[in-house]
Image 1: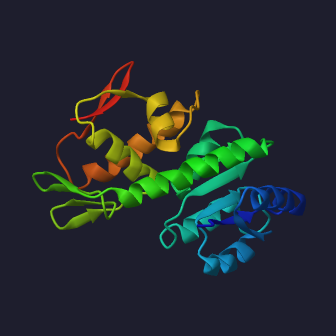
Image 2: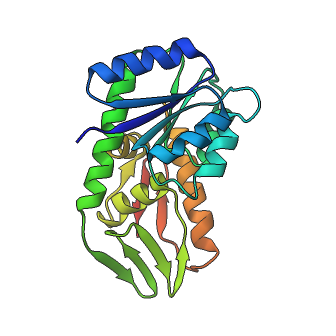
Length: 223
């Protein structure tokens, strides 16, 4: 199977360089140079989207917010920004990961492989876990409290699945990152902290009990 990748960046040289490299390693690559073109390219049904944040007009954050409820594929931001708040804003818009410019094409490829592999793992898992009215449907990647669905992003669900499948086991932030994204990435604990904060916020609206416990100085566990 050849995966389809959509690359969105207002710099044509970057688009062309990424396209040429990914074509060589076996992907079908489509490009767009602005937010409007990106929206139009969604008809190709990409398996993964590489999305630049800083584009004129409709920037990457706006594109991500608009498509996330309709597109259930990994979205990786390409960004020259390095402030923690910018990364958090990207996650809140619905992105799964980010890579900071300038980057090596080999690293970009490694992240793409990790995310696509993660997608395939998710498709193959079957079963349901219940805690009273709290239900996780792993095969459909959905979570319910009673009959009400709690909507999680792809990465949020991956974290819930990792912790809930290993109830009581403590995972530090670096290990969670490595297991979710498929490779080691020291220094990105803020990403995990923000995802967990958002998961808890969504849970708290429908569920009274504590589900994800912070083990101070260590990490998190499912209780």
